[in-house]
Amino acid sequence: MSVKKKDPRTTEEAIDAVLRPQKWEEYVGQERIKKNLKVIIEAAKKRKENPDHLLFYGAPGLGKTTLAYLVAKELKTNIRITAGPLIERPGDLAALLTNLSDGDILFIDEIHRLTKTCEELIYPAMEDFKLHLVTGKGAMAQTLELKLPKFTLIGATTRIALLSSPLRSRFGATFQLNFYTQEEIKKIIRRSANILGVEVTEQAIDLISERSRFTPRIANRLLKRLRDFAQIEGNGVIDKNIAQTGFEAMGIDNLGLEESDRKILRTIIQKFNGGPVGIQALAATLGEEIDTILEIYEPYLLQLGLLKRTHRGRIATDLAYSHLGFTSKSKQISF
Ligand code: ADP
Image (cartoon, rainbow, N blue to C red; front, side, top):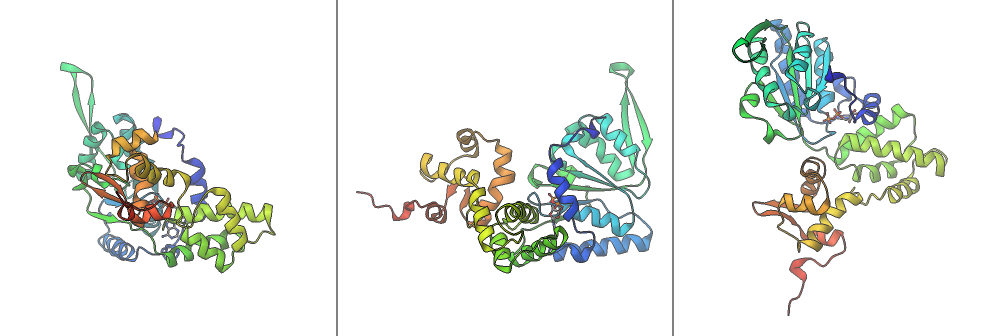
């Protein structure tokens, strides 16, 4: 079954697993979402029913998978984790669904990448816990109706706009995860440093949190990288000097931009005169996938105000010009 296929994100997931919050109290921020989820869970427990299907959306690394684990833990149920691209054929989805038990949670990450056929199969599964399987071909084709266990689907996506409205409407509650504040990121760094058993000075925590792109997964990743620098180039403690040396070596600047982010901004400024430039033209010039720009790079550049999205395309802002050392268009003198 292709669901068992090796996921390319495995290494990152191993890091995530060690540092993943195990209790609500450890899950920093996103207070409104936590409050709402707790109400949904308590109400379902009282009624002795399953909670509604839930949809989480937001940039990668903001804590969608972690929330799904916490919901399962609170309900004391099993959780089965998969992702849209891993469910290639209707048979894969059928195998997944029929292997669940009553009350289980099925978590589908990147749910916007489910195929159309699988998506249509999932509608009756979500609504009536039924699976309509087609056997045979042409005139011999028959639809087989299978009863499914009563499960809760938790979907996660980085691209809510790509979800069809019939699928969206079948979720009882939808939650948008926001970027974290710097204070929240600092809390997460302190907790992770504790788990990893590494000492980090407050000045270093400041530097890391400024460069974490308001995202827990990135904060944890930077912490782990700096731990290596501290071991090799220092005495094991992550202090201001180690952090600065590490960030310089990694090519991460004071806004947390990496070379690939700066390249996007530089390309817009130098090759497209600051924009507006369409996403297709930008992706082609950079040699990047459109989806990678939309999902990985752009949200943070927009959030920082380095990039603006208009109906005519992307524009590099004055802030982007000054951050990269260019004279902004508004200050350029024309003769
Ligand atoms: P997503 O599913 O949105 O890509 P994850 O739930 O896998 O993100 O989170 C990535 C990692 O970031 C987790 O393993 C966890 O260590 C950390 N993390 C995410 N959200 C939080 C949070 N609110 N508090 C503490 N750590 C978090």
